[in-house]
Length: 352
Ligand code: PMP
Image (tube, helix red, strand yellow):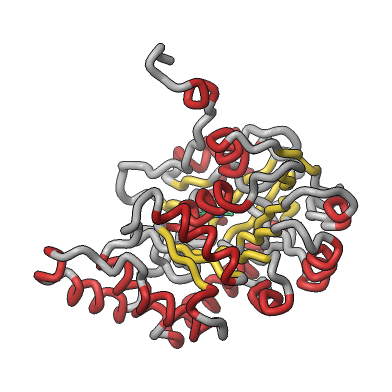
């Protein structure tokens, strides 16, 4: 704290990202990265874009990428916004669309960046508890005014809300912006992009970090009615008109052009998740149903913090949140089959 800080900075509790350990050879199952490399076509596009063109500014409007995403998702380019990871897209959405007279609502157990953005932009908010089964019940949001944001599938639980429920919420709150954060949707969810045409109040946010194995490239996007997209563009242009560099734009386009690789990689992650859930259940864990590239699991008798520490001693890193209601859970990202095998083996040893 310093007397030079503005009061809003003095009051901020910044987001703490998941650990990126410096030690190599760790089995890293803590930040939901894809265990597989990006498509070879992405790597070729990066090599090609990293030529003398780097001397020049990138396209500030990322037109090639927006058209590629628009074509891929069956919308118009003016319905697409792109940013430096979905974190930046979300930050701009909080600033441009989620600050209104009535408080913003989001689940008590969800992406821990949301309260941070509220602090940064001074957004009044109201936290809505998940139900007993750790599900988001959208009926809890329908009766009162105010914008809404939630991840679907939710993080860190992995649980999914149906499109029918989302449609009902959009109809019940036609004058409120609803943001669906679909960082993990490709691992088992149904995208709400299908609802955008009929609901001008819906913004869907996705990322290339997880299902496209491009966390290091930092590309996220939003799809919605052109009026919502224009609000995001206005804020972005008042802030940094070049959020996506040349490499990110070229690599992201190439990723959407390799559908075969994308489908193969996502199917592998889903298949590993299903057998890992079975094995963990066999070891005495209760595992929530997951539509994401991670599982959320609680052991019947053993303390989660202790289990995370014991795994760490065996060079396996998983995520443990010291937060109310979930402190006995571990969030485990889906690795390759060999990594998941090593996890199961280590847990069997630890559990005796
Ligand atoms: N939304 C959710 C729910 C997430 O878990 C994450 C990853 N931490 C993000 C958004 C941001 O991902 P990225 O900035 O890499 O696109």
